Structure formats: C-alpha cells, structure tokens
Length: 470
Image (cartoon, rainbow, N blue to C red; front, side):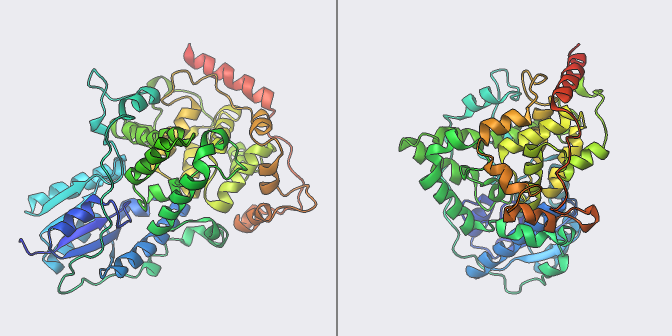
C-alpha cells in the first residue's frame, strides 16, 4: 500500500497554499487524486452558496490543471463515492480537511468509521480554523460562551505559519473518470439572478490573495473607524473566500499581525473579527443546536411569529424602512451584505416584526455567497437575543438613527433604493432585474409605507422580551 494513490477529498479548502491535507499527501510522494463530491451536504445548500461553490470548484480545477494534476468530480453519497473510487483506483488512503457544523460532522464521522473498518487509512486535518474548538477551554475546562474572554484566551497564542503552496503532485497511472461540472447545474436555482450577481464575486485563490493584499495595503489602517459605514469601501470582504477555503485563516492572521506590528491602527480590530469567526465555530461545535434551536434554553418557548406577509415584505426589500430595504436589495444584487446592515435587518425582522430568527437565517442561507453555517447561525441568534450575548434583550436597532449615524449622506440608500429618484443608481435598478418576475416589482412603483411603526415595533419587542426575562 506504500505506493497506492491517496484520494484527497476537497470540500471547503479549495486552495494550493496552506492546505495541510494537500501538503501531507504531497509529502508522501505517492500519487494523489484530488476529488470533489457533490454529496448530500452540497445538495442541501441554498441557491447562492451552491452557485458560488460551483464557481470555486471550477477555479480550483484550473489551478490543479496548472500544476499537472486534475480534479475528479463525482456526484452521490460521500461514502459510496469514495468506496467506488477506492475500487477503481486502488487507493490506500483518503485525506480531507475537517469541518465542524453538525451535518458535516455526522457525514465525516460515518465516512471515517466505515473506511477504517474496511482497512482503509482515513485521516482528517485542520485547514478551516486557527484554533480547533476542543483546543480552547476556560480554566474550568469548559467551552467559552462569551466572545470577549474567548478573544483574550487566544489573542496571544502562537498560530503556525502558513504552509507553502504546492507546486506539483504525483499523478496516478490512470485517472478515474470525472463528471462534468456543467452537468451539475449548481446555479440552476439562481435563475436570472446569476447574471446580476456574477460581477460582484471574487473567485479563486489568486483573487483572494489579491483581495487580502489590497486590504492590508490600503484600508486596514482606517478599518476600525470606517468599517460600520456601509457606503465606504472599508472592509476586507474576505468572508466570501474564507467560506470556500480559497484563503486560509492563518494566512489572514499573519498578514494582520504584520500590519499590527507596522503600527496600522485598524489591524487589531481586524484580527478580532477573524477570531469572531473562530468563536462561531467554537459554539457550533460545542452546542450544535445553535443551528436550529434557540441557543439559550429559556428562549425555546418565545412566541415568535412564523413566516408570513411581514416576512415576505422584509425578504423583498419592501418594508418601507429605507435602510432595511437597501440592505436586503444589496444582498440580492451582490450576494453579500455589509455587516452593520446585517445586524440592522436581523434586528428589524426579529424585534420590530417579532418574526422567528430561523426565517431570516434560512433566507440568508439562500441568498449569501459568503454563507457560513456557523457565522450565520450565531449572528442571527446574537441579534435576536436567543444567542451568546450577556444582555441581549434591550438591543433593538433603530434603522433610522442607524442610517443617520452610519450613512449620513444617504450614499448607501441612494445606491440601493430606486423608487422616487429621478436618476436611480445602476445597482438600484439591477435589483429589479435580479428578483423573480413573479414578484411583479418595478422601479416605477411608489416606495411603500412602513409595514410597522418603528416606535411601535420597539415598544412591542421590549415588552415581549421583558416577559421572557420574567
């Protein structure tokens, strides 16, 4: 078995640099067969993330071609596909990078157990995080439930330097047959929206590296001061690339550390945001119910509204609250949403409209090209009040005052709201080209009245949350 090929199962680690599983396979000197499996986990993704994943797979396949290798594509249940490939290729080992959300863990544990029972070497590696969830504990040996002490526990830890980019892989004598990526139709659910969103994506490892370099060189100094202003080009936008593993968190961490050492003012705050992602995975691993049930047990019986007309107005960017609607339209056109805007639209849905956070979570899962199972679940619950926050119930973002503070010149609103403007921004008009025709929306329509008064919604939310506290 010492000369048998290694199946290298890629998932959310679509890169050649700082990829421990890839490096380990390469260092054996044995033939390496890179594989991507369109399995049950991939099939269950929403429209935008599945489409964006398909773009990432295509870019990574080209990168492998560039080093004399190739990516084998197969569709089916992960374990059965791997068994078939072992039989076809005579592979003696399967390597992959660990994931930490409940669905991935269940799949991976079943695959590892079955392969090992069948005499196969099955080994997983850490490529998705800097600090694996079981490596960070309180003094009592427990997991962290609050971000600030989590940050203090890890900020001075050594983070291993990124591994070098792999420049070549030993090839097998015969490559297994690969399916065609186009036949998977991973963008089918995007419909006409794909054409609108496509110019806003940043696909592949090289593009991710360029994005990081530009941020560190140009914007990191002002990051803390400007990051909450959605009209400003102040953030890194690396969440898109992180979620597909087109860049590693270690690479970003060390780049941010160098900026910090150079005295760039916003670098530490940028590193804190990277650790916020780590904290999300810390929680999803230790408390997997965060993805579907209230993280705080006392919120299980909170009387959320279900889906309905109010939620539909929110989804369509027609609540009559400009900041909320602008943010929802930004997401539909670009596949992303500014982080300050994410908090505002989540607060509005769960507090002013008292709608179940899972309704919003599901919509984000369908629309975000940077969808991440841990960050999405934790973010929604943090804002809703049912998640990891020491005193969440009184935080009700007022979209009007937030707009006054963070969009004082209405640049963000003007970019995304077309109704009532003599010369609407091209991006605002793009929204109407992207949405389903069945919605019947047109920029010539009048802007809607608010579906609920902001003062009324806040008062109702605070009363409901006070009841939960009691």
